[in-house]
Length: 381
Image 1: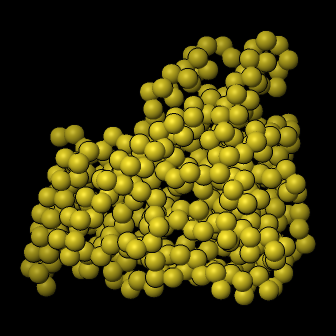
Image 2 (image 1 turned 90 degrees about the vertical axis):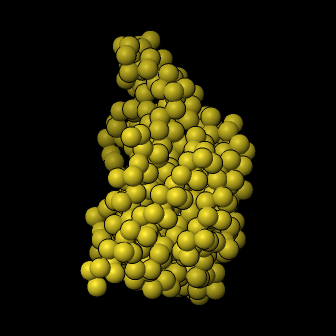
């Protein structure tokens, strides 16, 4: 039995065209990009070409692209790096941030900083009034994700950035889930820093970037040979960076088709969910088109995910990057969802290659598994 993959917010398959762009840098002799000989110069040219592709994909200049090994590294770099060159004050972040933002923000408390969460409403949209109130205390860094990895909710980053800038704070956004799903334009968002990642857009794992306004004073996380304008030392992963660049180019070219196709799949899926009496989270908010987050009271999300996996459907119970926790989704709890319902949460995230037939088959399987698990629960009771 072949499995159907419905977990594209966690990671995506490597596009064949991306792989082909990487192979020469994996199979042939290539030089260190800092070397002066022809092999090194060739590698440097490949890195700089990829940098231009990444910049073009997200409305930035090539000189603003700092390559990292992961979105987690880029997010830590933004929060810790900007804070390191500021007088200790306050860092603000939304209550629905990924742990690679919330944890470094909390870690700054160890060196005398304040760190505070900004709440969200029942749909997961940032509480602007609370942000404005929190900014009355001197604040150096604000970080709010563009699109949530669990609910798919899109924040009004332009408004958030304007408010933060007026208060004298640097504003960062984690745009990992936005790139390739909605238009992402660094300049238009008006942020100082933005994180994007390769493996969410059919590129290789191990490549990401922090897009950084050159006027921002930031301290490197890694010191060494001075690569990436002295901001991220370490020999560049040429093959992964080349693949990242190609994935960005393809993502932009396919954006309209992806948006239209996955929106159609999600609409059909959520229409079917209504017949199953499940709760769909953030259904009335603006969301990235491929994501649906839902729950059924009385059924554990992890149990349902495991049952669906056995039937050939790969979905998630929340963020794949937070697998060290068995607690209910912090995103749903921040939205005011009762813990018992939040424990039942399941995320479906569609990709370009999923089909309506797969949606229909999945809904049938989901219905059967829900009935089966309810029967087991009633017998156990």
